[in-house]
Image: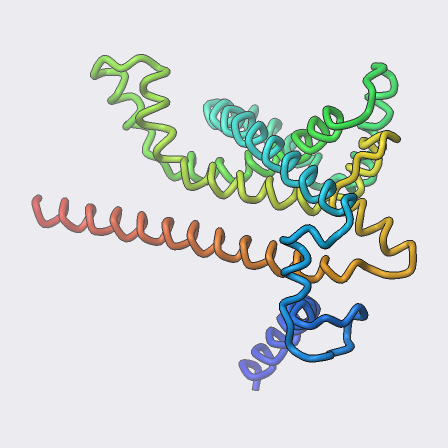
Length: 274
């Protein structure tokens, strides 16, 4: 009975989580302007999205979103990786303190982060726009990259790095040829997570995008909803983003699984050799 109730509870949670997404995906294949009104199967919304049938403001919002997300994810991956390596090399107490500080932006509500960055940019006299949005996204994405990379560093054998130095490699060469290959899956996961968070963010963006008309998908959808409805092509766009993210997750997980299998096979061969 307990097992059955556990399965039912899990199924209920999954339905609550994924039913809205499935509904959006289903109704992206109909021409109806109103979500929930099925008028027959059609790919008109996808055709309109790719053929320029949508208004220019939505196209600009899509471009801005992906440019900002790519730049922010790239920079935060580099900064988060370097920070994770530095944190990993600290002594135990200092590492705990720095990890605690790193977790503060993650636990902090987005609206507080947005207001804080807004006041910071105003006090420094920085004109709000592309630059401030990218800096804000880098700020809240970097701690997530640190959390993605740290487990890979904890799993890595520290003797490999020391062996590379003993064999004549410089610290930079040892990092490039030893550490980076070991933590690359964590870096890729951190990049994908940062990219997704940047696309999804609204609270921080709305406080840092200024008044020059810079819009991302989140701010565009918010403004569109306040007008009394949503652009139908957003259903198709949401479905495409969902499929792309799912494919990326499957590829990353498959690569990690394959690497784990290869490592296990290498250990088994080593045992047999001994």
